[in-house]
Amino acid sequence: MPVHHGQIIEKIIRRNGHSISDVARLTNVNRRSVYNWFNQQQLKPEIIYRIGCVINHDFSAELPQLFTPEDFERGFKKTSFPGSNFNDPEDLYNKHYWKDKYIELLERYNTLLSDKAFVAV
Image (cartoon, rainbow, N blue to C red; front, side):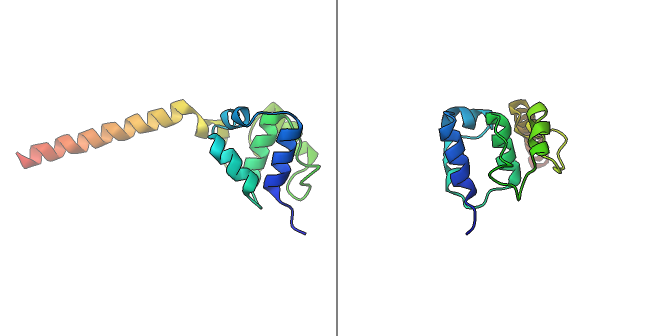
């Protein structure tokens, strides 16, 4: 019988008394995403790992095919998924990172618009 990742995660979160809002905030997603995770049969190990690190839970007991206890020992100290190609996954979700990317994109767009204005004249 296949393991339902979402149900396992939901059971652990609710059993340990974590609020969905806090889990969403700490994983940098909205509450709807957390509820969507609960409905997923299979989740990416990175997502499960991130949730485990935020709620301080070692999912290696429930999902031994995905994790070892050592993965989470390391993760509680630093939040990067073992085997991940990101140096610091928090940077990907850092609001300043996305704000800077957005501003850079706007500046490039404005430059393109001003270049077109000179051509049109």
